[in-house]
Length: 170
Image (cartoon, rainbow, N blue to C red; front, top):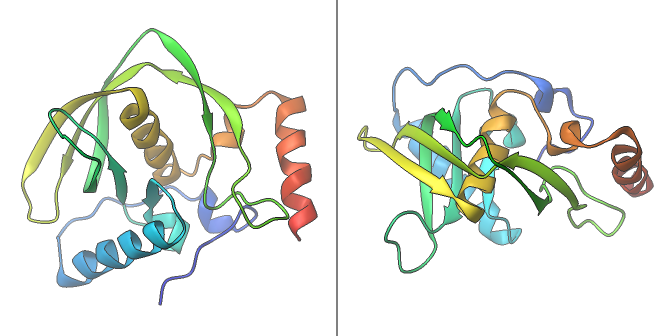
């Protein structure tokens, strides 16, 4: 059974290793992560958030011509292009919880769009330009693969406000 790693756990600050082979174990982990994300009403989850230091993530959103949000399982995702235009949007994280056991939110500035390439669980290669909510989610989750949390983008004052809520949880 996977367990969510919370802010303060050092595994969240580690850089993940690329996946060299898509094994049944990886597929099983991806499925477990989807269940965990859905159970916690999340929209994304990266491997280090469940203590696994490999480059894979899941996210639930609309990409391209999707009519409804669906779950994407991304192995070795990579941002190959970023917008020069920056937008602010509120972000939270299943690993950064307040005293009510719910994510703590704050505005974060990120590129408006990104072009991303990844491999799916069947070994097929994909490439898409993501904007809006999808771009926000994938940037947040890829940051997890590099040991970066959304709080790292905040000013010292805003970061302290978020962390004071996190500390009250403990």
